[in-house]
Length: 116
Image (cartoon, rainbow, N blue to C red; front, side):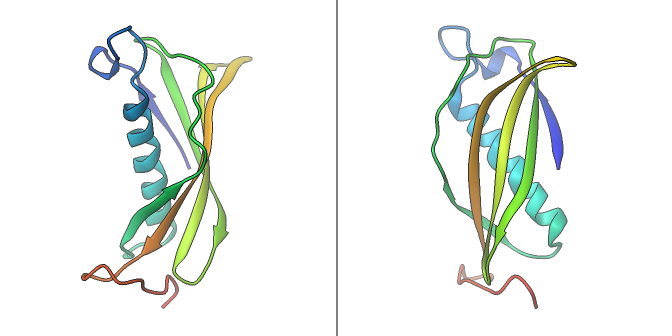
């Protein structure tokens, strides 16, 4: 799944760059949407994110492309590889990548099989 985000003034830190926590929130949301579209009706909660390392700063007005692809599936959990790209056309730069993992839970928060 691919989605986009526009970096707005409220997304910036005190130095005028995109706040890292804001990007992580967008990534978590995009991957959760991908998982929910792949498996409608399941209750996915985030259980982890691999290495968090920002490769380039991002300024206001930049449009980011967020790409999520399922890379692993177990009985109760699944993982998505995500990359964040800045730029367009031939001038694209990957600024962040990680793997986000989710588990399917019931109403009480207990693990549930994904396939039912």
